[in-house]
Image 1 (spheres, rainbow, N blue to C red):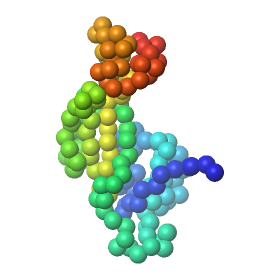
Image 2: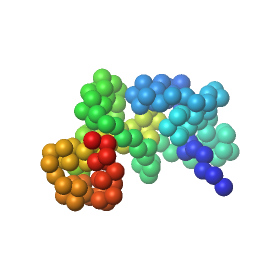
Image 3: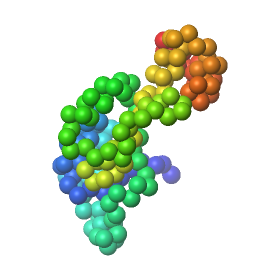
Image 4: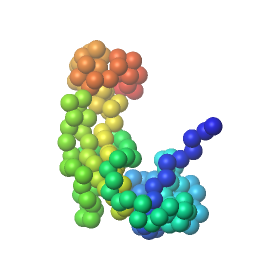
Length: 155
């Protein structure tokens, strides 16, 4: 068995397609009209209740029980881009976790939660460039030494 794609139920496939293409730089790899698959490994589906033969009122909006997760190298640049979208609804504004990763969570047009986090590799390289050892960096960002060593090769 092979996992293929996560699928999000959407009210308007064109609105959602534009949202993910513009804000998240997702390219459409397959467009079947009411079903669109993106290069990021997820798809959107209009008329989900009809397709799955479930009651329309059982497709719940804003369930807050899953999220799509994206990482960006330039977190501040993404926040500036996000700020140009006046209709964005935030789960929370940008914050920094104890492992030093800056994140923001927003809702897409159908209230699916999306987390955008600063790349952990970028964070590791920042600490290494500031003179921290591999072991110190691993402790600070709460990642394995092996991960930090892999990041060090990218400096």
